[in-house]
Image 1 (spheres, rainbow, N blue to C red):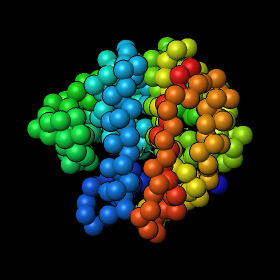
Image 2 (spheres, rainbow, N blue to C red):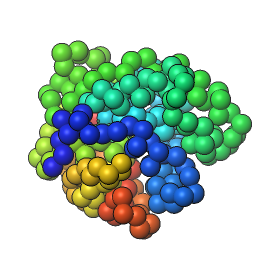
Image 3 (cartoon, helix red, strand yellow):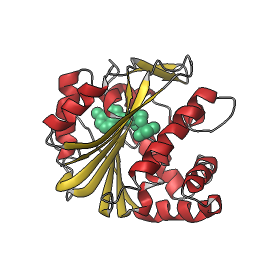
Amino acid sequence: FTEADFYQQNFNPRGYLEDYYSMSDGKKGAKAFLMQNLRSLHKIFSLDELRGGTLIDVGCGPTIYQLLSACERFQEIIALDYTDQNRQELEKWLKNEEGAFDWVPVVKYVCELEGDREKWAEKQEKVRKKVKQVLKCDVTKANPTGPVSLPPADCIVSTLCLEGACKDLPTFCSALRNIGTLVKPGGHLVMVTVLGETFYAFNKQVFSCLCLQKHEVEAAVEAAGFEVKLSEVQPYTESTECMDCQGVLALVARR
Ligand code: SAH
C-alpha cells in the first residue's frame, strides 16, 4: 500500500491536476467524475445546517474544487495536507502566482450550478481571501496537525483522501477518529469517498486505494462519534485505465 511517504516522494501535483482536473473533453472519464463530485458538493453546501465560522479541509492536495461551494458558507478556511509539494502547489494558486493551475473552467461550472456562471472571478477571489492557512497534517496521527493544535472547526471536509491514506479498514476508522477531533461537537463532517477502488494512476505512478463499500464508510463514521445525515452513492460507469472506481459516496455527518 502506498502510504504517506510514498506521496511525499512520488505525488506530482501538476500531473494530478492535469489528468483529473483539467475539464478537458479529451479526458472524458475524469471530467464526468469531477462534475459529479462538484454537483454533490454543491448540493451538500446548500443544506441549511452547513454554515459557520471555520471550515477545515483535510487532505486538500493541490486542489480547490472542494472549496468552491463551501466558501459561500464559511468565514475562514484552513487547508491541510501531508505532502509539501501539494501544499506549495495550492499556495501558488492562492497567491495567484505565475504558472499556477488554471481552475477557471471548474470555477465557472460551479458558478453555473449556483445560478450565475459570470460570477467566477468573484468566487476565485472569495476562495483566495478565505483560505487563511495551509498546514501539514497526518491523518494517521492522534493529533493530525501536531505539534500545532487548531481550535475545533464548525465543519471539516475531506475529499478522496482517507481511502488513499489508510491501508486497511482499522486504519481508516482510526483516521476518522483522528480527524473527528478537528470538528466541534455539533459540527459537521463532509466526505467524498471513492467506493470499490483499489488503485488510481497518473503520471506513470500508481497509488493504492483502500477498497471500500458504502456500509463500511458509514459504520466507520458512526464509530468515530458522528451521526450520518446524508449518504448518497453515484455509480461510476466510465471506463478508464487510470482508476478502477465503482462509485462515489458523498456523505454528511454531525458530530
Ligand atoms: N483532496 C484532493 C486530493 C486527494 S489526493 C482531491 O480531492 O483531489 C490524496 C491526498 O491525500 C494527497 O494530497 C496526499 O498528500 C494526501 N495524504 C496521503 N496520506 C496522507 C496522510 N497520512 N495524512 C494527510 N494527507 C495524506
